[in-house]
Image (tube, rainbow, N blue to C red; front, top):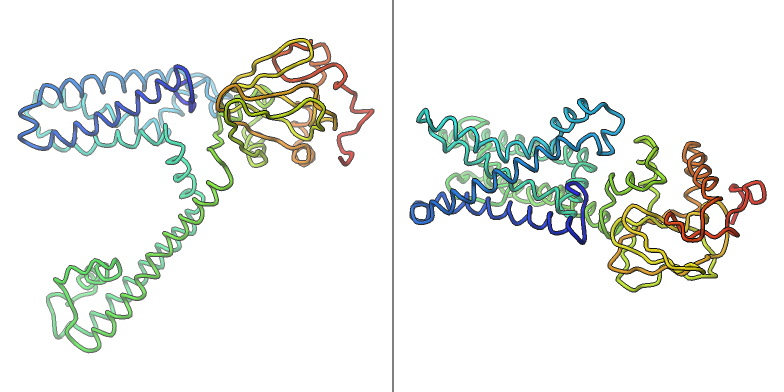
Length: 398
């Protein structure tokens, strides 16, 4: 519950409460820097800090304790899993969210200046990234485009260096203080390229003004380059997925739970995401099936011939479509706003060619379900749909 993105129930309430607590504690740190407000509401700020540190400490300890249950650490021993989690980026942010409070408590008795901990307390703001799919998407985009961003940063530094050197040559005699060296000239170059232009340093020679004009125009191009890279990649990410397909979302599906990290990563690249409003039909009885569905969040109701079955997060339905082209045996509709992951039969064939373990796992699931009843909670299967692969090879074109 602590790591997944919940959309209803206790998980939803817990995540919203943690987000509110992060915002409240960061706001208290900001207001506490104002002397008048700090004197008037000092006790309230102190109470907020104690409550926030207690809650964040409990959260941090629970995450460490449950680390062996998380998919990235599932193959490790409990001790190694907890150590690996402690060294992860999110865990380090969690630690710095509570560390200043404990340091200030112990160092306060020694009369130390505690203002240096103010910045560390504000690191709590970055805890919001864990609960915001949008922020996680942006971080993923920046990581994916890191080479292009590094290249643009290198070019930008080159432009700054070239402009500063040219201005030093043109203006060092006229303004020896402002342009007496290349490092001193770089301050002017950064101002000009950033289009800030404080006006404290300006060229006075003809050559210097020409260099300044060229630097200004080049600055527009260079600053727009990384912005364009991030904006384009982020737009593609949002267009490709209506929501973020996380690692735990895929690995929590029983069908993929025993697969290794590379197999899960390969499956993630083939999944399509779909958000379904409450009451929307997903599949209808009698229609041809070409894909299966995994429930990332929400609930669906399967109307089997004999009864009705409700499936929730982590479960799946329509899986026999991946082994044989067949007509649906049940109507399926969303009981509440639901997020689905869709895997087509074509993608399965490609995955099985590159990763035989996936095919083996699919075959094992199908074989185990031969004895399932029509009320099985693992999917919308009826006995007529369970047909031997010898009668209908998977490699056959649909």
